[in-house]
Amino acid sequence: MAKGLDKNRERKSLLSSFGKNLVRRSGSSCELCNSKGTALGIYEIPPVPKEPDYDRCLFICDDCRTQLNNTSKIQADHWRCLNNTVWSETAVIQALSIRMLRIIASDHNWAEELLDQVYPDPEVEEMAHI
Ligand SMILES: [Zn+2]
Image 1 (cartoon, rainbow, N blue to C red):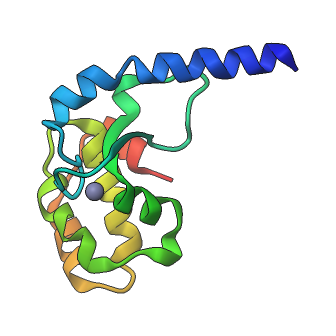
Image 2: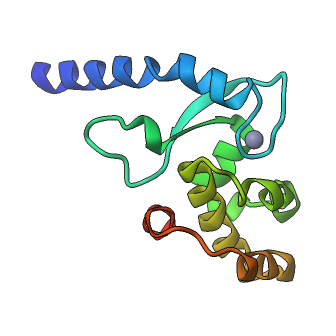
């Protein structure tokens, strides 16, 4: 039990050590919807690995996080931001954008049309695949 707790603490501190680089990469705005001046936190694209992996982390706002964690709360208009992020050169940002678009595309043509234009690299596709 104690061992598990230590592991958890170790993981958390490793994860928060990514913070500085994520702040720099994101320019302190949400890496999905670009909102500024709001609390940002680290989001790991699922499935979450045992060892935190910087290349699977994003820096995002609570609004995006809530909708990512609960697809019944998705407001499609919030995700118009994917028009930009789906072209991101950061693999994890592109991968998560594709993942979200695939969910939204079932009800929204704009998302489907956008997806039709994107040909992700295999590594991005693998990360985007659920
Ligand atoms: Zn956001």
